[in-house]
Amino acid sequence: MPPYTLLVLLIAFERLIELNTARRNTEWSLARGGREHGAGHYPAMVLLHTGLLAGCLAEVHYGGRPFVAALGWPMIGLVAAAQLLRWWCVSALGPRWNTRVIVVPGLPLVERGPYRLLRHPNYAAVAVEGAALPLVHGAWITALCFTVLNAPWLAVRLRCENAALGAAAPA
Image (cartoon, rainbow, N blue to C red; front, side, top):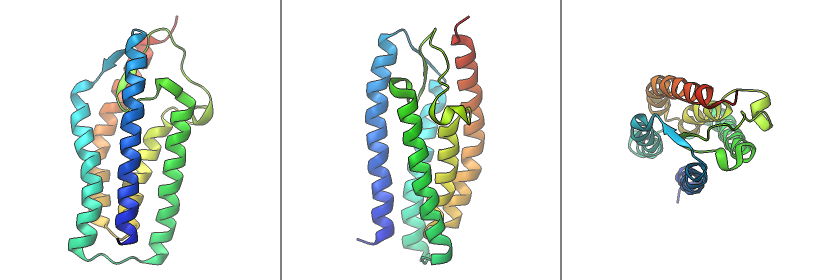
């Protein structure tokens, strides 16, 4: 199996672990009165993120994109950094982390881990990974398409999440 295919499959496996974690955390949140916000945009985001992985493989395979070490190795570093940041977010939020926007009323905002530095660090990880993963093997069309398509969905998601967190904040 080519190394890049293995990398993309490892990221896909990591996504499955994320979805399992999110499922457990959804149950935890709903059991404590959590309410989901923005459920309508969630399927499109799942499709976009699935498309990122498929696009990486398709463009490299069918487009004959070569591995260029001067670009590929730094991009591998960014992909690894994005994974570390994402799991730092998961760790800092604990059972409140989710792939959906589910807020448990009355809980204070998390201000530890990467949330000391950024309000939405997980979305920074998504943006970095969405550009870097395709560029590991020169899939610039996939990187560009994901980045352009992700921008409006990310704006929707940020508005949704900020409104939900603001409405649920303790008095």
